[in-house]
Structure formats: C-alpha cells, structure tokens
Amino acid sequence: MHALLQTVAHQSGARLLFIKGPTMSGQGLRNHRTYADVDVLVHPDDLQLLVDALGGIGWHAVASVDAPRLLGNKSVTLSHPGWPSTFDLHYHFPGIFQERTAAFDFLWNRRTQTRVAQVDVPVPDLVSNAVIGALNYLKEPDAAYSATEFPMIVAKLSSLDQDWLQRELDTVADALRARTTIAPLYDSLALESASDLTAAEERAWIVMTTNAGSRTGGWLEELRSVPWSRKPGVLGRALWLSKEELLIQHPETPPTRGAVFALRLTRLRAGLASLPGVLRSYRQARLVRRDRGEE
Amino acid sequence: MTAESWQHSDSLAWVDVPDGIALVDLARLSAETVPLVLTGSAAAIWDAIDGTRSTAQVVEALAQQFDDVDPDDLARSTEHFLHELAERGLVSLRAAD
Image (cartoon, rainbow over all chains, first blue to last red):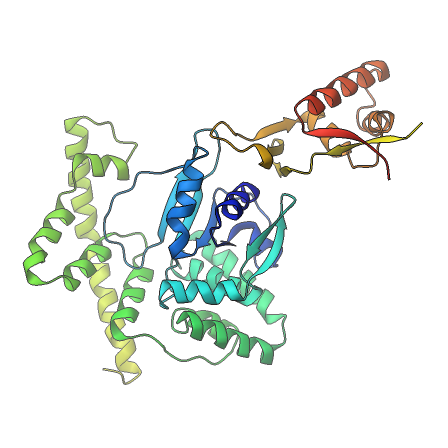
C-alpha cells in the first residue's frame, strides 16, 4: 500500500511524507508488526490533488461527522472495497502547533527515504519522525500502545550522542512548535526543554490528552471559541446530531427509530459523564501555568 | 545457448502478509486494482525467483522445501505456475547476466 500511495503521489505531484508504521520500524523507533493503515503527512496545498488522484483509482473518503475535536487528527481517510486497509492522509498532526504549511515544509526539507515493498518512499528524518511518533503516543497517553511504544522511541534516541540529540531535538521542536507537547520526551531523555505555547494552546493540549476518548472537550472548546450569537447553534448540534451523523459515528447501530433514540440517550449520558473529567483538565491546565508563574 | 533466469517485473511491489505475499503491479493502476495474494506453494515459488534461477533451478529450490511431493508433479506445477505468472506480466525470463 505504501508503494501504491507513493506511486500515485509521485505521478500527481503531491508532496507527502510517510509517518508511523513501518517507517518508524525502519528507523528503529518501533517494533516490526502488521499495520492496519498507512499514515502520511500531506502538504496542505496538495491534499485535494492527492485525494482526486486516488479517487481516480477507486479510493474514496470514508464518511465522517463534522464535529469539533480538540486538536484532533486533521486527516482524510480513504478506503477501497478491494483493499484491507485505509490511507490516512493527515494535513496536520495534533501536538504540532506550527502553521501547517510551515510545519510540512520544515519536515519536507529534512526528509530522508526508506524502502518499502521495493519502492523508495519519503519519510521524516529520524529525530522528526521520533517527535511525530512521540506525539502520536502522548496525545493518547492512556492507550495500551503508548505504554510499550513510547519507551522504544526513548531507547532509540538514548543510544545517540546526547549533545547532538539536544541540538536536533531543539531544532525540530522549535520549528514545529512542539516543545511543550513533547516535554515528556525531553524529560525521559533527561534533556532540557522550555514551554513554547500560549495559554489557550496549552489548555487545548492538556484537555485533549487527558480526555482523548471524549468528544465533550471538543464541543466545549468550540463553545468557548465562538461568539455568543453562535453559541446556541453549537450547543444544539452538540446535543442533537442528525440521525445520519449518529449512524456514521456508530455504524453498528440498526437504523431504526428505537435504536437511534437509545443511541441519543447513551451519547448524552456519556457526554455528561465525561464533563467532570474535562473540567478537571481545564483546572489542571490553569495550575500548570500558575506553577510556572504564567498566570 | 543463452542461460535464462526468472525475474520479477520491475513495476511490481510486494510485501509479506500473514497469509503469504501480497503484490500489486504499479504500472497498471486502476479502480479495479486489488492486491494479488500468493499463499502456500505459490508464495514459495515467488520467493524462489531471485533473478538468477532458471526454471530447473527454481524447481530444485522448491524440491528442498516440498520433499514429500512427487518430483515430476512438482516440476510440472511449478513450470505451469511460472508461465501463468509470465502471462500476467508479473515475471519474465531474461538472459542471465
């Protein structure tokens, strides 16, 4: 699948970098295993070009609901009925606070290559890929894979010259505006770091990483950010998605009135149940900044 | 007489998958393109093609893996499969270097 995607990208002129999965295995940042999806970071200006080119060979976007998500994966997922996996085309990555095009250009200018299925594919350089991999785990610190795979990144980076690593990590983290978000990586490597986010950015990151499985934080943040005149509309959508949207989010639900009604109740209950956790993480974000004397 | 060896097509990409080997021809991408998965003896024949082996040598390599199969049957099936792969443009016989 990597080879196919790279071929299409090359033919269409779309710039992309393969991230996660076997590219990290090839750089010693992750164990070899079977991967479900192929993840790439696409130049924001080239996304539609690539989506159109893939559409020409039968790959189409998977339906999704346009609900606000906290720094959620800005990506398009494409699938093909004859293929077992999907393409996840990311045009931004959570935890990278640099402007999208600038972030991609930085990574693109430092790219290297790895060989997958007899084809050379472009990948971020070792330290950049380590940062992206670390962010992938840090955005969901409670996920099972985070406990096993984050230490592998730390182990690989620990084997490098530490003065060189400090300089490289600083360069990548500064360019991506990811110093704060990869702070646990700096800590694990016993390297020095500093905060580089605004209060709002850091709050969004803390709320997201402490409530990764909850959509409530996304809706709350959306409510905070829109003017008062738009708040009722956002609140209405948060509470009442259409039947079609609910079924996209929960394709396992039969499309009957009863089942959809039960799903609405479950969704509202889950939202209310996650609210205290989201509010706790807002308080946590305030405390973090207060401890640093920034509030 | 020039020695000939079996080679994979240059436009192919393939990877190991849990069931065998999945391959796709990158020169013929279309909406109908799906991975071709080779399993069992088909995957073994694919692996035995290394750009240097002739038909007889591919059969010989397989005979070491499938020593419980009748040698004549093995040779016949292998030759048949090699030509089937060649008809699909996935492999070719080329003059050895």
